[in-house]
Length: 360
Image 1 (cartoon, rainbow, N blue to C red):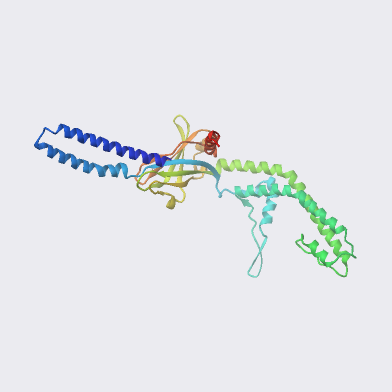
Image 2: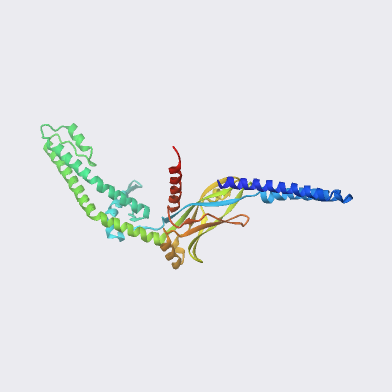
């Protein structure tokens, strides 16, 4: 839409210039009719001037790039370099066990087993994934308990007289370590199955009870850790659309400035860099490029700026992005709220109004 408006504006400017030129020529001809010999010289000078001004007009007005920037949204993320040690928080003991189960204790190297180091430090994304898995386990445990009870019920109908190797194979399916069918002592085989199923049922009940009592503490602790990391170890990503409505290509420089206006003559500046600079910095004529600018970790900012960012993040204070092209010309973006998702909500609300007014 912006590109179309710019093109129409350029066309109107050219048309106005042509009309003005025509009027100037007509007036000049009318005034110079009685001058005589000087009229030809003046006409020649006027023609030469117009011939010179036309390419200048095309070069500096028509044939040029016109950059506009629209900020699509802002997000705040925690760096993957920020790690959380599961050993340092007693509330996360259940998640630590899950992490240990994910990491094999031994690997085979040089023909033999070798103990692996247990790294119990995780990123915030990994921590939240462990929490979601624990919540899903809590939902799945009643079904698992019912399955183990069902296994015991199936086992109870068998006696040494009606228990066959085929039935033994069927009972072995849910077991990691299979139980051998002892032809000479079938009662012993049945007893081994009973002990295995009872042990599994007991373990599942024990985990279920542990998780039921600890999941609220785990949830609160993960929320607390997340808030601390966001306040001290986060960075910002700004999604933008770069629009070139001119007739020449242009390129922007990697650095950019994101200014958050928090009051009269009071602001916070975030230094950004363009991601994928090699492919996103050049914008062809009459085209758009969607790119992302990223800030450094806010831990590198002065403490006062960090406090202001944490105070005003999520509020309706306004902010703008500023970029510079290869010619040193700066361009400012549209103004958006310093909040994740709020700009998209504004767009959704506008679309909802249009959809409501649209006739079926």
